[in-house]
Amino acid sequence: MAHIIDGKLISDTIKTEIATSVKGLLDKGLRAPHLAAVIAGDDGAALSYVSSIEKQCKGVGFMSSVYHLSPNITEEEFLATIDFLNNDDEIDGYIIQMPLPKQISIDKVTAHVSPAKDMDCFHPENMGNLLLGKECYLPATPHGVIELIQRSGIETSGKNCVIVGRSNIVGKPLSMLMLQKSINATVTVCHSRTENLPQVCRRADILIVAIGQPEMITAEYVKEGATVIDVGIHRLDAPDQPKGYRLCGDVKFDEVSQICGAITPTPGGTGAMTTACLLQNTLTARMKKM
Ligand code: NDP
Image 1: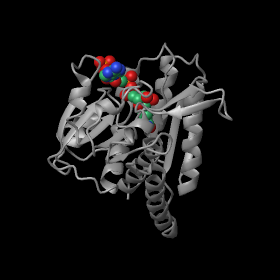
Image 2: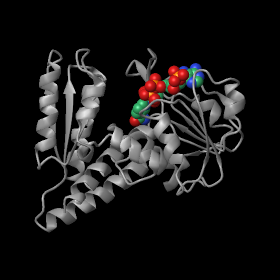
Image 3: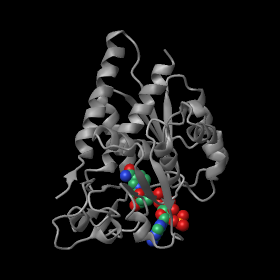
């Protein structure tokens, strides 16, 4: 049975580190970091993510604000909210929660965000800096994956890393991070058109999966002893379960954990890390103002 990489434990450690830094600020009579979230509409998953961010901000001693806008808001009004957040010195950073209503252009909104307050690293300037290996806010989910790997003591230098998924929020930025000179992995990025996917995945010492396909990655895709990081998260109907559903990832955990060396569970793996890394970015933004 593989070593289970405990994302909850590692994210709790990061949050304790953040809380200690916040206490240091408050002890000096300085303001705590302040993270804002903008959400338009009533998507259940988005609302519950934002409410979990608020709770976790409180847990580390941050201030938080939620701008819950109407799903009918005009693009002009939405951009005016972003302008307000860009200009408010008391807000260190913010996130814009997806999905956005149809009438609002994601590209326009992203370009409007101040790179200094872009806690999700969506702005082209931050993405460009990430590509160039320059200092920038790191996108939360990919950063969480890196933290999980590094804090678990998994060797990356010279290792074959296969990332399945090339989205702008997970796969692509993760590939850039795994290539950085501090990490030194040899990176392959796969997608829906990749041929012989199981064979390519079996070359991986570190297999990272972000495809949005419940339990697609079976033992056939995994080399014995590999590290498997599962970014996917799904809620599947399960009438026999007390809640009527169960959570799972993109990896068939029960099967893959029998042959790999280390693996993240779902829940309790990468999900918990995303918010911890978002809080870390907000702390960095606050510290930059000192
Ligand atoms: P996207 O749908 O944006 O991207 C999915 C990627 O997977 C695409 O590149 C797609 O290829 C590829 N893909 C889809 N099906 C296959 C297949 N059968 N074989 C090979 N490649 C495939 O998803 P995201 O990156 O946004 O999210 C991925 C998963 O991670 C989801 O389950 C999501 O819920 C989860 N997630 C978890 C987070 C966390 O905090 N843990 C945060 C963000 C996401 P192509 O480009 O060719 O279409």
